Amino acid sequence: MDTNAQSNRQSGMERERTKRILVIDDDASIRKLLETMLMKEGYEVSSMGAVDRFRVQDFFGYDLILLDIMMPGMDGIVLCRHIAEHIDCPVIFLTAKTQEEDLVEGLQSGAVDYVAKPFRRKELIARVQAHLRARDLPHERLVRTISGITFDFDARRVFVGKEEINVSRREFDILTLLALHPGKTYTRETIYEAVYDLCSDTMISSVSEYVYQIRKKLEPYRLQPIDTVWGVGYRWRAE
Image (tube, rainbow, N blue to C red):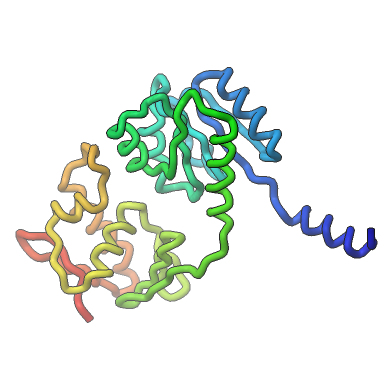
């Protein structure tokens, strides 16, 4: 083999970072099985058992998470809701619950897919590979500036000029719902239904608190595009 070609091939392989996968399951035998299967495919695998307390940082740095639903303590759906707004990798549920309402609840919590237990090796590996490929596909970022605020819809980030405004997932959802429909009045109930899971037990009054926090974050930039429609809800000020 040509020395330069071999060198370029090795350099390319070095640049291609090994994908990191986190497995979360309270069953040690399943964790071991998944670790073995995934490492044979060339992935770097970490695992953890049932979760009661956690730091969000524990879920950073992974390319994909395999998460069991039925676990003692905090189940997978609740955990996914807690971490979904802080991570940028796909979550695939492992579940023995195959009723439609259970699967819908799982996907609404932030997961992108599920694999039914007992799972088949080839199916699981194929789903993992498909979501990792999709994550790596190059695409044109959807970025738009509205009323002086720049929205990166792919990364779910908000900027004023070159300065990023730190917003939560709910704040981003409320901002984009209103900004993409300037002049349209949304009731608190409509906003609540648009940004919360169907099974959420959060109070509708939390919508007003999120709007308050958004206004506080935009105040230093002298931007206040959200008007209150008293007794009704909110609207984005039409330019």
